[in-house]
Image (cartoon, rainbow over all chains, first blue to last red; front, side, top):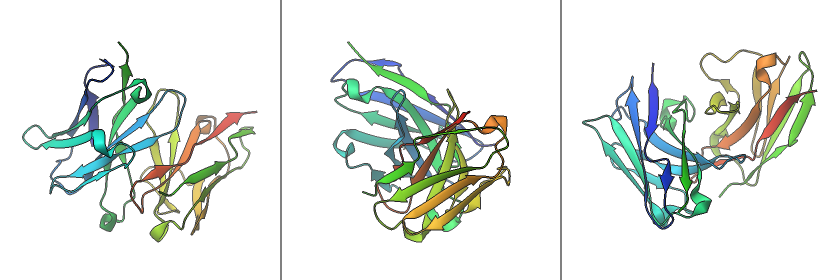
Length: 122
Length: 108
């Protein structure tokens, strides 16, 4: 059974960098999937942040592109998100998820982490 | 980017009734790369439907999806108590992937 688990600070100061990690079990991050970040402000909808593939392909939401960095650690089977210059508008629950390549024919975002709340406040 | 508009915002129904949720895209969704998710309070979304009409693993057959192009529908044939939740559509055919704003299905 594939499981994803987010971890990182729950509180980040404005203008600093938000850093989250997603640990994957039951699958290898080198297995061909895209590893994805999504966020959801309290009481609001879902926003796709972007994704990374083990071959180095990355995709970003243009609205966040200038502030986002993705990375993979194959030795620990985990992937990470860094979001720089955060403001209160970046306060949200952050989810990591697995996204199959389209040629798998098996859809999108099939496994999700439980989510982690990150609050931006001084 | 493709904007997805879901309607209605809230659907008030009783258990056993049929729910019909709509998702309209601002542009054609390529290859019907349209998915539906269910989200309950405090939980991550769960994939229900992908490819507009294919049920994800373990999803009951009371959930069905249809549509193509710019108009898509999620139907729940007979609502069970556990189906009261928020439902999101998502297009994953073009980048950035985008979600609709959600439809809340509440108990009448």
